[in-house]
Image 1: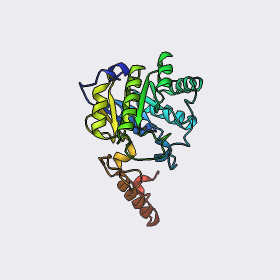
Image 2 (image 1 turned 135 degrees about the vertical axis):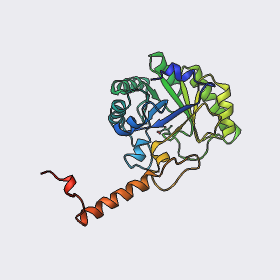
Image 3 (image 1 turned 180 degrees about the vertical axis):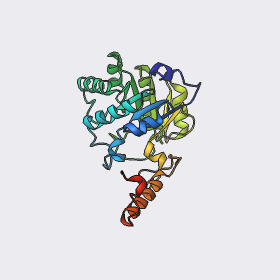
Image 4 (image 1 turned 90 degrees about the horizontal axis):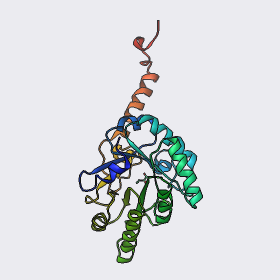
Length: 254
Ligand code: KIV
């Protein structure tokens, strides 16, 4: 298993591949393949069926973290702090520790460099997240397209670096800005919709497997259409049951 320290020193040496997971079985399948596993609060959408991530609770995240940690014993696991879990330093520390007790090795927070600084000072490994930050944004579009917002993102990224984060997610920003951020900070950037010049990439597992909805955002690459295969299997099972073909004698006891 790579440590946060080793992930940090992968910058400019080896690209970092992160994936999300939310359950024991999928985590087991990606264990030792992904450099890091993120239990993203995207769980709210792809697992729980909410429209966005703002209804996700610590209980939701901790249950998933335990399952992922039991499935992936050889991979660095990052727990995504849900909305409200770091609205004060006291809450942030309490909830970060709950993630660690559930099996995560580090936590991720959206923006809030001062909170990152506080957590790091208490010995918590923190991954930052800037650009499109779904917990606080209402405008789900590429961020940092004008000079003012681009400067703000760069400034936040520099603070996350200065305050001791071991890596930084850049979500949905122009590739030129992602390249500039990547060159301006000492920690690795992990992009999602931020182009190829980041130090690593992250995608939501359900997106790369075709398991969530029909809409495919521009930045997603589908590596498999598992959703279609699952539907086909469900249909075949249903038809076999209805036609009396399942169970056959080989699936029966004597
Ligand atoms: O919740 C999530 O899956 C994330 C990634 C998109 C970085 O925050």
